Amino acid sequence: MKNFLKLAALPLLGAALLAGCGKQPGPREHLSAVRSALQVYYGDHEGKFPDTLDELTKDGKYLLELPKVDLPGHRASNAVKYISGPTLSPKNLTDEGGYAYYNSDKYPDTKGAVVLNCTHANKKGAPVHSY
View 1 (cartoon, rainbow, N blue to C red):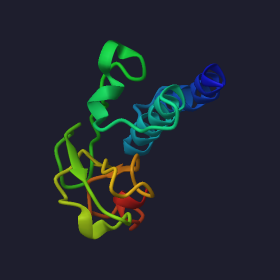
View 2: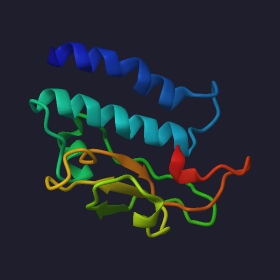
View 3: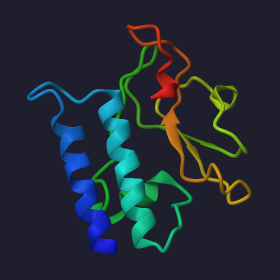
C-alpha cells in the first residue's frame, strides 16, 4: 500500500513542478506538491500526519525543501504558521505569507491540513487561502 501511495503521488508532484510547460510553478502548484508529500507521508506512517512540515524534508524523502510561495502582498516565503483549531477558517490565518499547517492532535478532523497563510485575493478576486 505504501508503494502504491508513492506511485499515485508521482504524477501530482510532476504536474505541480512542471505545470505550464516551462513556466515557473506558482503558489497553487507549490501547495499541491506539499499536499501530495503529506499524503505520501501519511501512507508511510500508518495514518499519521507529521507534527511539523519540516518532517517532510528530512533526508529529502518527501520534499527536498519546502517550496517558497510568492503570494500577493508578501515576499516569497516558506515560513510555516502552526495552527490548532477544529475548523479550517481564514480567521485562524495571520496573513504573513508562507503556509499555515493544522497540526494539533486535539483536532483530528483538521490535523494535516495545509493552506496558504494569506488573506489577499488573487487576480481573479478569489481568496488565496482557499486554494
